[in-house]
Picture 1 (cartoon, rainbow, N blue to C red):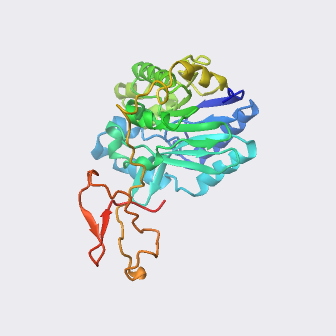
Picture 2: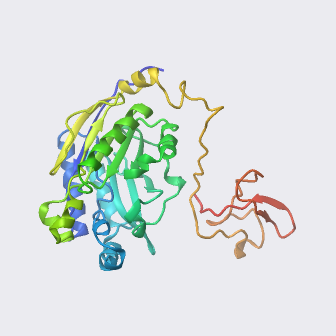
Length: 360
């Protein structure tokens, strides 16, 4: 196969949210898309849960004192699809850019840390949820599932995404590597923990670029001094909301393509020479000639989780031929599957292992 002669211009946005208005944050997103596109960007990546904002309050306040802020986040969270996705879709389509945006997604009574990927025509091509919220985040968000561990084809190439400390889950990263991602979009909150967070982040994204043989475009958030004071009035505790920014773009060789943004707002732009993907993988392809799948391989359960599965909906009158949105497929009629209970048709027929799932 011939080498990829494409060059993709990527932009990583380090930006502060509007802590008072979800609409204000969305407006900043759309302006940043336009600004990046004016610089020729074909891919624009925003920070983790940028809309309406990352729940910084949960890092500096105890759970018993976080109730009002948590409820406000529910009120301002994003419905998918909804007005926010419509606005970002329109901006992506208008400027012909692929957009990766982190949002707090509300799905009925639960919030999720969600990554949205819009293709250059505005289509929402991927919605994935962070599989395990970290530390304080577990009081804020629910858990995602394997259905979002997908690499998707976009106008800029095969694109994968993970949020923050998902990059410390080597199997999650490997699942994207095995799907041959060419560009990996990473998102972190920024303005947290201090310089050590930024240092760890840089090591992490550069390592993934080397191991995967892909480009990494990483965006972190930013808080102004006034915003930090609004979140946490205690000067001693404000230290926890400073530092931790490393908006950066990394080549498959682990090289930083430009100096990372470590403070303030800005847009980092770099050209991705896609031939470097093949150049790196010629030497070390972790899921190809450098893999030993007969010794070590990953098993991914990529089904969408569901709290309920109806095996025999009333309107089917017991017929397996009538498929409804909640109809079970029984894809795991495998005695080695960890869930051992076997589903039975009323006539006694063994249908295999019943695993709760939602329709695709």
